[in-house]
Image (cartoon, rainbow, N blue to C red; front, side):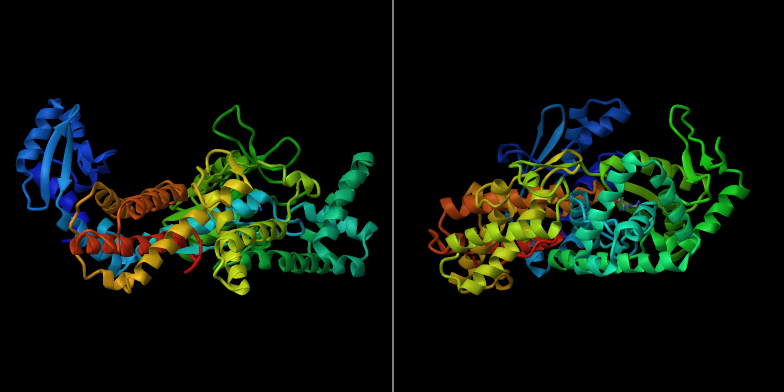
Length: 575
Ligand code: ARG
């Protein structure tokens, strides 16, 4: 364990042990300070220990500081109520930059002391509903889920992505009824999704006037569940048509799944769940003959597992999914990236799953808020349904304008490719850079701006850093020959950005928040640009400074590419 970042934590740990305290290395949090005046890193360890031992935090801090002697540590100060502030030798940052240039995956692994490939996660994201256009919340789930998958992979987890597509459920009763009553298969086939949507809308319109229709749809759905061949045939067609719409969106987004086990996949797995729930007396009879699970909280409604007519529900299939994931993969975690609107539903689901002991895995609902469209772009579209392909087209068209403005020395084909990368990247980054727990805003102008927290800004910074290296005739990899020799705080700050990357990834993973990573990259870009704008790199005052800045530039390029790839964003080489 002689990796530098590890070493730092170890040093503090051993000093505390020597000073006579009992603790775990994991209890130690080394935080980056706000300004260099307070050192490079600070730890509140002394305050934590003092609290438990009822000692004065500053005394504890001093006892630890006395033992904290190492050539890596330049200076120690105790500040405030008992923070230990550390200044670190530049040799440390040189080593870190070398590790970064050796490969960021290894760097993260070693720096966090990870156990590669030891843990497994099953993750469900995207999950659009068949026969309906993908909604905006499905886009959010797709993009957030894909990034969480990548971040956990970087953390050494084995991640299996399984898309719980909505390909069953009572809406099919409505749709099949509508097709049979008003539809014409040949006509539908010409433009399936909009036509199915029209039929679906027509059903709701007619059902408002005619209450019998809902019963007809229910009967239709029951027939389908019982395996009626005509309904099954129709359903298969609908699923196929829907994929013709969904797959191109996935391709454009560069999103992949290991499995597409939609709700219908669990059809033959539900009877076992129903049997288990009934025989253990967990599923009791509701008033009207439905099977229910009462909540432990009397103010909450029960979970309905089977309807009075014997038809299964969304939750029945989700329970079967949890059981199947457990049986197939025995993962440590099961994650569902779903709209906050389903928060109560997931609480119910996990509660019932726990009572049934379906899995020892930790079930997590990663919720996200709504997307608000700032410039009314949505309202100009049909209803409040947005066709994702239209949205991506619009993003690329707007990005093309930018690409033409900025990339004047590119060929038209290169401009078009740049517009694709920027347009898709901008949509993704706009989502991922916002705290998923709050409502998010969708604003074409900010997301496609070269200034501020946007994908084009980060891409532009990465391209600029790459072009510095090109002009200096070196690659990031061979910048690793150089050593750091700091002469300016802008260099030190950039070096700190680089070394705090593994902690950022850990935090993004722990809290399922890619936004921490986005913020890190934005800071990195700003601090690189400060160095680029205020200091000379290739024409630096001394050879030592030139090498320092080239090493930092090389590490910045690598980190920008790595970080953006964890957000699922491509990086253009030239802009
Ligand atoms: N298809 C559902 C919907 O659009 C979301 C599925 C979420 N995943 C799950 N395992 N329940 O509302």
